Length: 334
Image (tube, rainbow, N blue to C red; front, side):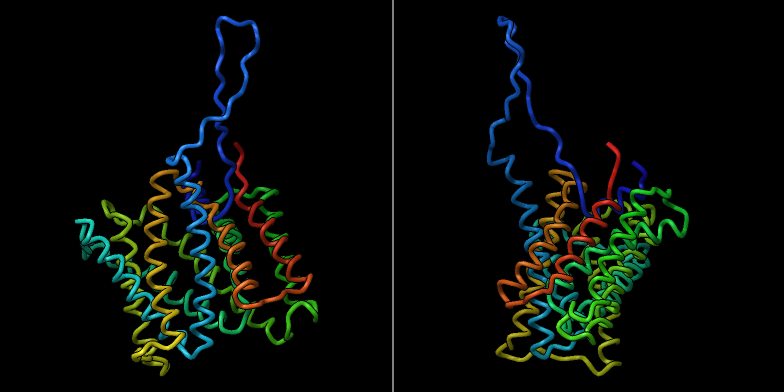
């Protein structure tokens, strides 16, 4: 598989499970072999359990962000404290495991570039827009990452044009139009501009995937070091930005509801990072990429069940179109 396709596919969405049937042939019988399903063991359930866990944690992030920013936590202040705390939890986890993250000076440019584009700028948009839009809609917007990634890679000619995948782009954008154009699609038509702004977050994620290839990734650096370094770099950019915009806030005691959501998000995100690393180690990045689809499902479900969100038929249709578009963009020939 093309190396760049592997990176897009690992950040995104769809994989067909490998056949697991075992054929046992009775050499003393003339009857044909009978397919048998391998026994289900606790070990074989670990990847499935991790997959559901990651999807659920990702889906919960949108709810926690919504609670925090609507409770008075400013988006850029949220960004600073989240990246600082999450990076700290991962750093602590590395120390507990006897693998204290060590940041080489030569790797700093990578951390700074990835932290700025993928976390500071992208999440500043995400946190701001999440305060305006329903959790389910924002979850679907973030599913657009692979569509933008393939589109950008086509423009810079590092991906081949395939009609099936290009059709996925068109279907995905048709879903966007189904959200922003019909007057009855959103509770308030003025929210359409926030939907469009929200797509800046997955666009920046896609730019980061294209610009920062695997070749530029620091050598001999484990995932916890890489993640904590990137989060600390994002906090480095977020602090002066929060101060310049007058959005910096110091958490008080007792913590407000929004601050509790922020703290929970930072802890859960650290757990999610670790779960992702473990799933990739056990089952590979392609298998892990299915969690992106599941995060949309959990995000929509959490919004409906926990926050009482409701969607018009246009939005439900848009969700279906966008997910179908993402599936086509991530199509691979066997």
